[in-house]
Amino acid sequence: MNRPVFDASAIMCLLQKERGAEKLTEEICEAAVASSVNMAEVQGKLVLNGWDPEIAWEDALSCVSEVEALTAEQAKLAGTLIRSTAQYGLSLGDRSCLALAIYFGAEVYTTEKLWKNLKLGIPIHVIR
Figure 1 (cartoon, rainbow, N blue to C red):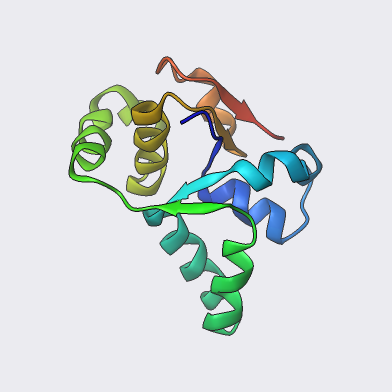
Figure 2 (figure 1 turned 135 degrees about the vertical axis):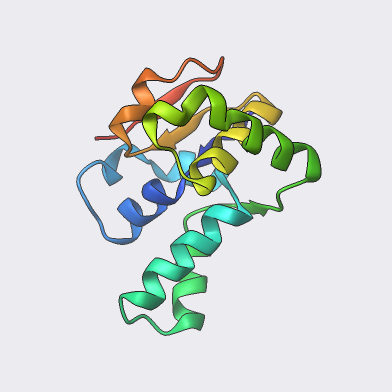
């Protein structure tokens, strides 16, 4: 899989048309995937912000071409990443995104500046 992986912050950036969203071109978005864990995170944030749950889900889905269910192997990797990422305070959603990208050898897009410091063997693009 050489498709880009979006974390929740990249999807929120797109949906809210924040600075950095312009870096996620139509071509990138058409190929992008997201972890089901990150999609749950986006859905929760949108619903808490007053969005209708159905509209929130459709809008979140419009940012990626596919939602990848977290496999047992990826879940193990996400849990294992806690040791190498603890100093950065990454959430389970963050680590699930990274596990998906590592598993597939894919690049990641995020707004999280701290991710620049991660040395995980995959390209990490911080969009702002």
